[in-house]
Image 1 (cartoon, rainbow, N blue to C red):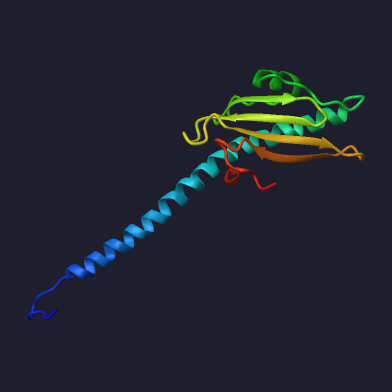
Image 2: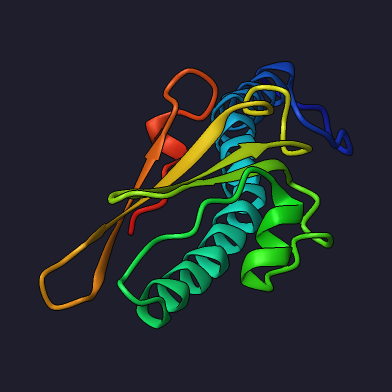
Length: 151
């Protein structure tokens, strides 16, 4: 389009192209940002579970014969293992089922409506040398495999 001398500004086509590019970037970036935010919030849950798993491993090593503890709720975990979860706001419930294998199950809360009330499970299987191999799993309905911890 020809411009007269002294005219400044963008053409309508240029503005539409910029708006289209911004729209495409927003359509890709916003869902990715939401996923990363949920993963970051779930880190608090997995860190709390890892702390409890360390206490369970210490209990297992110190008990004679080697035995896993059983705790029905967060208060029992604090009483039996000495791990306080009062400051953890992203876990509504945590249960330890004695095994072997021992399972630590946490119910997610205050993360996002798409994953709240979902569960993450940490399963500990004792080895012949006395060590414990821990494996993560998720319920698959609320907390999907995309949010499962890598190790």
